[in-house]
Amino acid sequence: MAASTKVAKISSVFRNRLFKNKVALVTGGGTGIGKAITQELLYLGCNVMIASRKVERLEAAVDEIRTSIPGCQINYTQCNIRQEESVKAMVARTLEEYGKIDFLVNNGGGQFYSAFRDFNFKGWNAVVETNLTGTYLCLREVYQQWMKDHGGAVVNIIAEMFSGMPGMSHSGAARAGVENLTKTLAVEWADDGIRINCVCPGNSIKSETATANYGPAKSDIFESNLPTIPLGRLGKPEEVSAAVCYLLCPAASFVTGTTMIVDGGEILFNARWPTGRDNTKAYSWEDDCEEDNSTPKSKL
Ligand SMILES: NC(=O)c1ccc[n+]([C@@H]2O[C@H](COP(=O)([O-])OP(=O)(O)OC[C@H]3O[C@@H](n4cnc5c(N)ncnc54)[C@H](OP(=O)(O)O)[C@@H]3O)[C@@H](O)[C@H]2O)c1
Image (cartoon, rainbow, N blue to C red; front, side, top):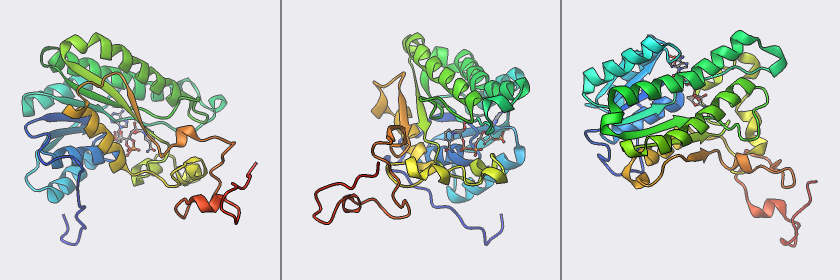
């Protein structure tokens, strides 16, 4: 790594060494939200295996993180979660490297922006195979190869599809499937000592890689959601990571089958109380009131 490269400062609100001697497998752990999760787990003493398709991304992430967190235990393995043999190998490789898997974070995924009428069967399959079938394969293999006999904790990253997902119907259907699967497995796997939950980021967690996925025509895909986010700003990958760490840690020992939404209140956006204010400045109640400071201005 070039001497001039800036070293990211990693931090966490959780106690030091919280995940000492634990092992996590994080899919898509080399970029965006997955990288933030990986960094926080490592910072808290966890051993982490990251996995995705592009080796150069994985290598770059491992190099960068080893510089930011000297002595951390991170490794990578190439995996396409759409391919059964590749997923089997990823889980086997993690067990070979670390001897166990305490945590699985199903974060790898993605989609393209398109109206339902404009994509074909291949496009549908690509998104559903990645986000739903890929998650199924990772769950099945980690369960079969380790967790059914040893327990563990799982977090599935989904997306905000609770009111449909216009422009991403394929992903909405797949993520709803993952959320439902999570509820089922929370019950079926309870006796095996496995907790499983979802974290749902809002459509507002900006990173370079996440933005690049949608191409130049949609380079404002995250900012365009600002008017519907009550907290008035985009979210950070680290804010999703904190939710994942909570659900993996003993503080959540009685929490299973649920979904934690990390979206700045976007899911509650209501046209009767539009957040059409200037989101470049922080919200203040006075902004919405007449001069006597008592009557909210109507924006209807
Ligand atoms: N950013 C948001 O606002 C937001 C909102 C809701 C949900 N999400 C979800 O959160 C997750 C992380 O997204 P992000 O925003 O951090 O974007 P990102 O940086 O593009 O992360 C996606 C990761 O998934 C990996 N991946 C994609 N397809 C894969 C496959 N077939 N097999 C293995 N790995 C695969 C990618 O690595 P490779 O390319 O190397 O395979 C990449 O590391 C995704 O599931 C995303 O859909 C994000």
